[in-house]
Amino acid sequence: MNPKSPKRLAAMLFVFSFPLLQACSTADHSAYIRSYEDAYQKRVPYTSHRVRRDGFHIYAREYGVKSERPTIVMMHGFPDSMHLYDRLVPLLATDRHIITFDFLGWGDSDKPLDHNYDVASLRRDLEAAITHFGLKRLVLVVHDASGQPGIDWALENPDKIAGMVLLNTYYGPAPTLKAPEAIARFSTPGLRRELSVWATRHFDYLWMRGYREQIARFISTKELREPFQKLLGYQSLQIRPAFYGLNRVLREEIVKRRQKMERLQSFHRPVRIIFGNDDPYLNAGVAKDLNRLFPDSELFLVKDAGHFVQIDKPAVLAELMRDFPPSGEANPNGKKGWQNEID
Image (cartoon, rainbow, N blue to C red):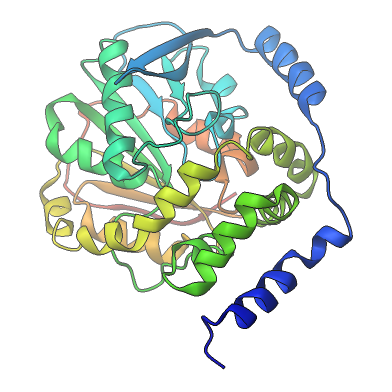
């Protein structure tokens, strides 16, 4: 049978949609989110900002106080939001100036339906935030999909970069790089992807079930899975256009950076690579490849932490980031620091 025949398509759609016979609604976590946000702001004061970009608004938060130390700008990946850093920020904001923001299409930022969601768009979001806050010198923290726009921007603006922190991220091709299950499904061209997009666009339950399952796999700490499934998934139905868009260009964006990877070897700013060692996707092998490429880099593999290392082990990250970059900025001997595993 032709896999694209109407009968074949109908059969596949029925199988894909079968879980709807079991449940047809999605949970409303709005009350939980309101309570969480009220409690969080009382505990961790911040100022909200609406950053303008091409007629849209990016939602950002500003923590801590400005000082002579460079501002820390933390970027999330997908499919999540700035809440990824909620456990880390309070440990650093007492003596560092910190900016977090949601990319267009994610979190509390605008979510235009006809927007071109790609790596160039993520980079323009970053540039808009840097301009809005008037940042002249910063430490850029990237995670997951924000690695590509963050590293691209750093390569073009080394004079503004005091250092970079790479958290379970990727840039170009890597032998051990593995796409998470949901990302593989939506980034691999073919009939399966098109059916997945159609089904999850039309049936909210299918999307929410898959979203919760994938988020759960990203967090190693069991007691944190449910609260962060709610927190990161609160607006997950609205992030679908951005998710579909970034996945459609994911593979070509990785291949595109094959030629750029040589430039990483001439980037002489301190780079601290901190990966959750339990992440099967953006794993220790990817971290080691990045460590070899960046000449002034240090590598730390955090035990008992997964893809969301900033959720699993915020205290470890805070200890490694509090005084970063070190005085003198680059490693004095030009050597790569190495730490197999840390608790």
